Image 1 (cartoon, helix red, strand yellow):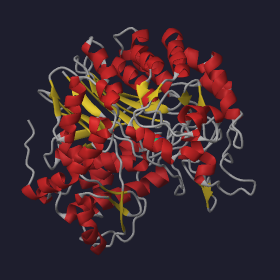
Image 2 (spheres, rainbow, N blue to C red):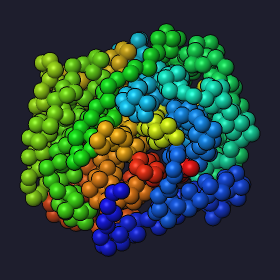
Image 3 (cartoon, rainbow, N blue to C red):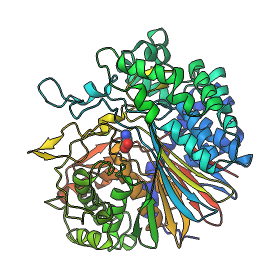
Length: 597
Ligand code: GLY
């Protein structure tokens, strides 16, 4: 068992942070949130899990556990696990329901990365279900007639940003490899909820209201999210018969029913017919889509191997770099209340993001120093730069060893918070960590067959070159845009000990790295680690979480030389610690829970 040592002062910092978060979570799903019907739809165990989260307590279980962003999705996964299904089976059920009840974050029209620890073989592998750039897309896709990059949202909203979805193929591939339950059975909850309706959550209602103008631009999307011209309301029962029909097709025909036939035709006509901003996705792109199995990327931190998704995600490399650079510093002794801990974490993060901006992209298309970036001697050298007492003045990419020679310019790409994370452990000891997305909240805002289409192509750098030097993450036909998604499995002595991940755009990396530090160095349980107020630094301001104890560090960080930016930092971390028992946590900033037996 890990030691639990948290100082009194820090406990008070947590306590300072927790009530607001807890209240937000309570409002999300409790009678106080004004949704009597919603609570009537929740089981006693779901309500108990929500209460545990609100009180800052983890959930424990003996056999299996699932943690995800919405109680209805978690319940669908729990049913599968209870009936003897595998973590891969449960993931399919969870994803199918998330695509309905949390449509702004992930779904069939998007992509995902999955990390899998297989109990039977003791091996870990990853599946890349990332969206691909259409074959007709050129590096000029996001340029105007003068060759200048488009404004971000001019590119996002409409058909131009839509990549070939990967999630349906990923669900099928995971089930083919590791499934135990009959495939059609995994769609039952999603179909029932889509047909009978579900109660719109406060978070979904709030986001629809905020995004109403963009959602109103396309008739199919507007009809669903703004019925009679008004944004959906919290607690309103919402049905999605088109989604139910799509799920029936997937259940009976498998992914082939998605990548061909009427669903594919609907995707292509929606993208290419998008008024004002048509895209170039074709039936050939859909027919050619492939999930790719890739080796996990692992980095050493303390007694642990931190393993996750390699390129085209920058997740495991950047999380691994941050932790690897910090390995030589005794964060445990310094603790979370010492601003020097946050200087070290912040500057390790800045150095890692400098490397990310220069070197990381889809390595099927560009040479990358993948091994060099997490090589212990390289990280030790980079970590040596942190041996200061104030913020680093110059932060530049390093010179990791390339597998073959290359020269790249620093990129320019913007990722905004969205996405969803699922962690699952089944009764057989398999562990799944999957982060899933349609990129921006509500993706491209285009909807067809009951689901939203992604805007993942805007994760490419809009700029293609800098001073004549190419940018690694520039758009190319068939390429996968660089991601920040960091589905992670932490290993100790060859066994999995933690599954974790988060949404949050490029801040995902900081959320995951910081939570691992809190769990590994500061002896917090998973719920405490997830609830800990955020301080994250990518390659610019030091972002501190508004309304929490993190704001208390603003003056000290400013004195060290950082530009500090207090702001909302809505991660959606879901984690399961694996030991003699399973211990789960869910991010109090969102609506999810951990549930197990
Ligand atoms: N679109 C979010 C990510 O892939 O990181």
